[in-house]
Amino acid sequence: MNTLEIKNLNVSIAGQRILKDFSLTIPKGEVHALMGPNGTGKSTLAKALAGHEDYEVESGEALLDGENIIGMEPDEIARAGLFMAFQYPSEIPGVTIANFIRAALTSRMEEGETFRAPDFYKELYARMDELKIDRKFTSRSVNEGFSGGEKKRCEILQMAMLKPRYAIMDETDSGLDIDALKIVAEGVNKMRGPDLGILVITHYQRLLNYIVPDKVHVMADGAIVRSGGPELALELEEKGYESVGAEPAGASA
Image (cartoon, rainbow, N blue to C red):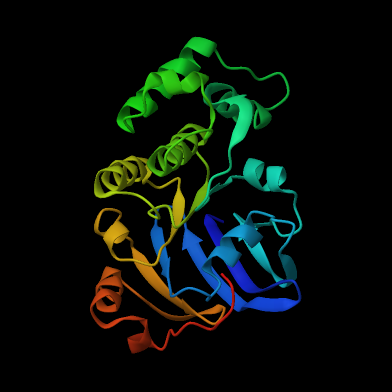
């Protein structure tokens, strides 16, 4: 199977159910956008799929190429092929970008498998150049002292190097100026292809002007209420979420 299939997922936090029989299928080779107002559960979905301990999955499945990742540890989920680009990337003092990415790549290797340092740095520098990241950043601690745009570009750099099967981008456009947004979008577009499925979580149309999705889904009160093509995002931009019955539910996303 070449899909990330989320089936009837029910997720709660602190005793409050946020996701309610949420279902979505993302095939490899496609970009899907998940939109909706605050409080509808978009970020809850991302964190639950990543294995965040604060989010209780009451029922349902998330099948990554047929393998259920619910209940796995976060590192196991990552090794299975799911990449998560968070809205607020964490700082990791004392761990350089180069060492962090190299360790992540090493953790996915089979026993006895190795890679050559010159090949690693050749690709790393090429990807950094594409994202307009100064090569000196390889020796800086992950996200420590970075601007919002630098953090988001660093996330896309990790995604490019790790080559996941599926990627979830949780409000990657948040806090980006137009120049940084274009750079991030260009980096994502270069990764599009038959071996990668992407879910872009966003409030706004502006990101989807640069990362044009194959399908758009609108979320309300913990579930998808409408799906369509890229034109659906334009309709939301023009008429607002209320036009499709997606009003804030009052729950924390």
